[in-house]
Image: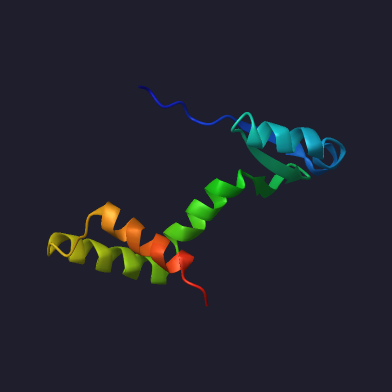
Length: 97
């Protein structure tokens, strides 16, 4: 399956203000990116919140440490069947506090 590059739309700040609801729909439904320009210069980008969170996660050093630690544990064979983990979670949820 070939992955298409996302469509990038450039709009003026005035146009963004006037058509903000439509831009939100295009980002969320159409998976488009919006670049807002002021005086012809890009000043703002609009993208889906899930993508923004993914981007921020890529720059989160503590998350990178957790991922590396989890990978080392996986390589060392320190894994448990998912059924066992889910059973433990369900038990903890049912226990009164």
